[in-house]
Image 1: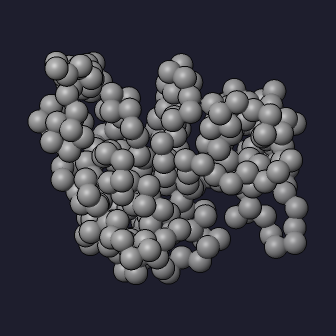
Image 2: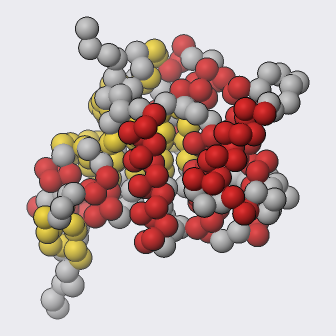
Length: 261
């Protein structure tokens, strides 16, 4: 008997403020798989991740590891799925260490304190993300790229099996983009993590994803391997972009081409 998928989404429909955002999305992510959702601005990518993470109501549409998300209490859900949002709310005056330690909340008893194990997990994650020297710094004093790594550190400290990454490298330079994504991929191999991400940089997305899903106007318009989804025809149709797609060692590379007048 095969294991249940990490994520099963069936006919997901979401409207915000009366405006339809997702119009019947189906998505399956196998345990241990990396799936990246791409699409033009306004396609519904972040909304999809929020629904999968339980941050938006999706009655009967989302199942995580065989369990309907509605059947998971908040604490249980936090041990299963961790989200890195595009712009997380950062409490004023909070240090890097204390912020990342919030990821251990699902394991700390009510009215209890963090254990030595919780602190050890946090310090290990900070070192892995090259943040060991920042633990006492306030988040507000960090650069955008440094803060992005701290947001990822909190999610990794949570110890969840499913990582939802909403534009995880948007504030990073190309070197730190590669470091963060290489780290996530390595942790995926070492700990059997499942990754569902959204990304704007199509070349980087294609380098790391096992499969890609192209959303447009709240619907899935293409799904498959990066080479099947990142085609000049699909990108021209749904992004209105002029590009060349070049085959790389790990996936297709998407190169913008200037339009001639």
